Image (tube, rainbow, N blue to C red; front, side, top):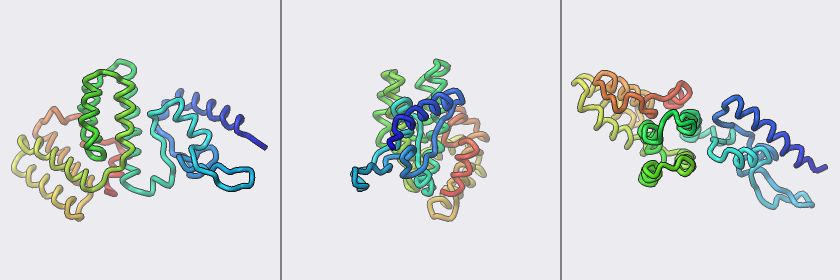
Length: 231
């Protein structure tokens, strides 16, 4: 029998609970009729797959909360996609403060600009324009679309070097050597992103670089910090 309406009602109930519990992202089941992310098969009357689409719950999530990060468990097998999803989850929670008027777009953008640069650098110019225009919804939509890009080693290496150029002006000689050694190791495949970021974060603290003291790329949450170790 057709259970579409029941699934839709269940999805609405779950969404209400998710909002109450401040859920900041969903990991959903690939190819599931309820939870597939762009890959739920739609069959015709003869059982043949006509096309794929979002599952019923995924569609309800995206309709009600279009910027909420959603991902299939299959996608998370890719370490760069996994780190991007975790970055989006962190940012979604932080963006609640913008929506509630507790902080503005400018400090949020300043905190997350290098997170965007590590996966979608070409989108930063447009994002800055949206920040300056002050439209929260337009900025949010574009920002979270940027974080759907997984990025890669080359993008992270460019961000690391950009941050190093800002940090090393204030670092001690020993701190600068440590940063350069960690960045060289990352670029040569001999070190992890976590080691490179930790070296930069230490130099930020040592040099008192206030502009980067709360930077989200250099100071990730525990889950993202663990993900950095695999990159």
